[in-house]
Amino acid sequence: MDGSLNAIDLVKTVHPRSGEDEPMTELPADLRRLFDSPNYAHLATLMPDGAPHSAPLWVGMEGDRIALLTSPSSRKARNIAHDARVAISITDHAQPFVMASVRGHVAERVEGDAAWVIIDRLSDKYLGQPYPLRTDRVVFLIEPAQARAITYG
Image (tube, rainbow, N blue to C red):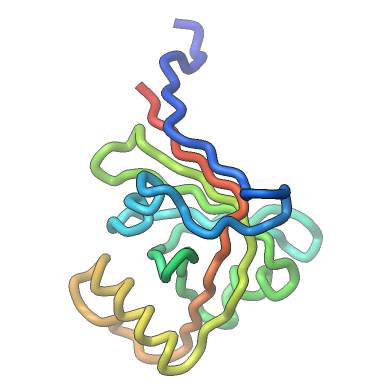
């Protein structure tokens, strides 16, 4: 074999409805399933000098937006404060050849009691219990602009 990937099955590619910069209103069901399940994702943000930064994290859906949690002083949060554009990749834990990538922007920062409702929902999905650290967390809600799911194999 020459090392190239063959048998790539493109499941779905989604673009904004009427213009490259408009946010999507919802992700298709096959992409939502990946974010609704306890799959780990990687968030890519941009450092102030333009260099990429990637970190693994928990994700979930809040309506049509992708939710993630972090410390308000984390590198992710500081990068998002500088530039709200993000990319997320996610792989199905049970089927590692099923994956998706999403590009978009952080549309909202949620703090306080409203954030803890989301944080505990994410923690219950991943740990089966409320989030164990009760301090220093914030939720970011991402509006997808482009998304695609791919199955290899």
